Length: 257
Ligand code: C5P
Image (cartoon, rainbow, N blue to C red; front, side, top):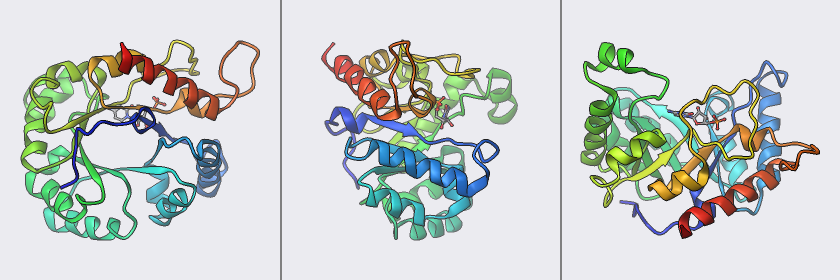
């Protein structure tokens, strides 16, 4: 099994989400071009690039293309199915070996374990606990428990399945960090540096990179503050690379504080 909870370098702690919309960029091909342009901009920094919808749309060949640019790939496919089909997904992905892959914890232990067994040597498999878009009421309706109880339950299942880590909101890191410290890496979206301005932001429960790392997250997932960086006269990063570099400085500060 891939070793988890290893000492990660600052750049191995930043996952840049490449979420472009086909509406905005003239369809699937336009989105793929934007993802590749972002990847070129980030080339050599040693960070992860996270792809989801575009990967489904253009296929796993995109992972190889991103690897060719020297980027680590986070395949955010959130796999969920019967164990046999999840094993087939695992077999197909073993041909391209993304560095990180997500599965839904609610797929159950056997399905998660099937993927872990097939890919665990090359890929860190992360279980998605409860989507942060679900509120308490949703969680009761779907899982008949509170979000906190659900996260804990899914974390236990992920550990039993032998996974490498979890995706969870920065708020949930506190609930888990002392229980699963030795086994599961904690990876959190919902990150906003002080300097970021995101048009019509939908992330509400956010932490800065520094605070998230200081709180015990192993890696942070950040999209728009990096993707949307462009020329400005406000002292903000002028491009995605500069935004990623500034974030890496904050990660370093979080590690040293
Ligand atoms: O642009 P932003 O920094 O909000 O992007 C965060 C990324 O993390 C997106 O790709 C989003 O889908 C993902 N994510 C999230 N909340 C979760 C799980 C994943 O924001 N609970």
